[in-house]
Length: 196
Image 1: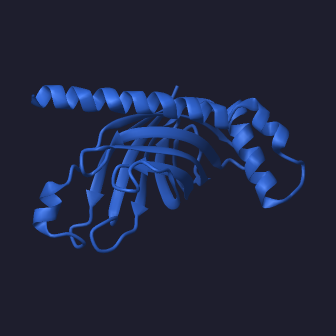
Image 2: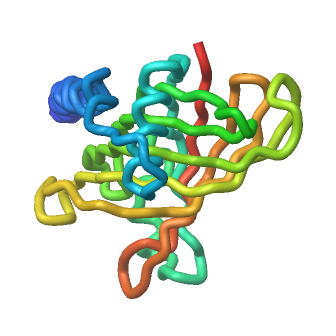
C-alpha cells in the first residue's frame, strides 16, 4: 500500500511536470520576441531579457533538494512533521548578458514540506561577482508562479523572492528565503543548477 501510494504520487507529479514543461515552452517560444517593442520601458526590457534568454540561452538541469524551516519559527513537533528533503527536478534556459550578469527561465517540480507536489515556473536575474568560468557568486531575485495543494488547491500564485548563489563554471548552489508568519513560510529553500 505504501509503495502504491508513493508511486501514484510520483506518476501524478510527472504528469503535472509534463504539462508545466508544455506551458513553459509556449510562454517562452520565439514569437514572444514579436510582442517586445524596441523601447526603454520596463515591460519591453523584461520582455527582451526573457526572449533573449530563451533563444540564446543554454540548457540547465535543476535539482531542488532541501527546505530548511527556521527552528525559531516553529515548534519541535511541527518541525518533525515537515518534509525537509524535498527532492525534485526541473529544466531551464540561462545566459550571461553583456554585463556579465545571469538571466534564467525555469520550471521545477518537487515535494513540498507536506509531502505534496509543488510546481514553479519563473524568471531569475542575478548580478554576478567573479569570473564565470571559475568560482563566482550571484545575488538577485526570482519572479515566478507557484502552484501547491495548500494554496487554493493548485491555483497558480505569483511571487518574487531574493536569490543567492555560489557557482563554479555552469554548476551552482542556489538559495532563497521564503518569508512567513504564523504557520507558514520562514524557509530557506536550496537547489542546484547544472548546465548541459
